[in-house]
Image (cartoon, rainbow, N blue to C red; front, top):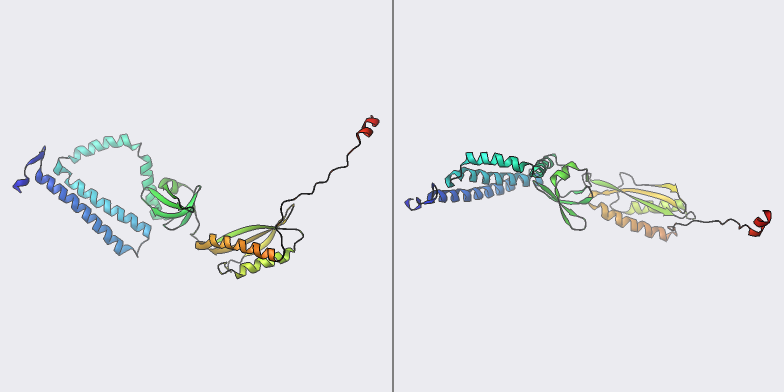
Length: 275
């Protein structure tokens, strides 16, 4: 090792630099090995999103510990670093409040699990499928294919709508028919369409009722349930099927209309004569 005893900088020798490099490389290798081991042994035992966070936590912890342990070899005094870090921490603490808040919120999201990867959720005005939950942010793929990164603090502090937490989901239609149409026949036709669709649930029972008698139509409300994972497809398909079947029996969906009666015009000459 005498060939590595030359001084590189200050008291740091070539041997110290060699050991530092080896330890850092070993830290990365050990971290990757542990991450792979956790992935293989725990993938069927814990939730996928929780496993991802655990992998990242172990990976970066091993690397940080490895690097910190050999910093003195390259002349970095940890005591002085901690003092300087404390002062710098006060300065940058205010600037990093959002980062810390996102980190803490991310931990709470992982362990409380109001959402998980694959869920269809709504956060504020953003709706879509959860693609990943990171330490600082959550990735959502919206229904039009756009990927949106939402800070975990916003996700955790906002009202979250989980569309698939319940295995079934209800959908609702409002359908107007003409006053001249047979309402009973229309209801029966809609009921038949619901019963024949393979993904409309029998329990809870679908309901059809007259909601109101409006200016130009009798308004019917249709409520039915479908599996959450195909809820939207069933809703769209069924609405078209109902329209087609109602047209077959002659039921019309009326346009808004209003009958206006004009008062009989007064004779201006009579008004003048009366004066």
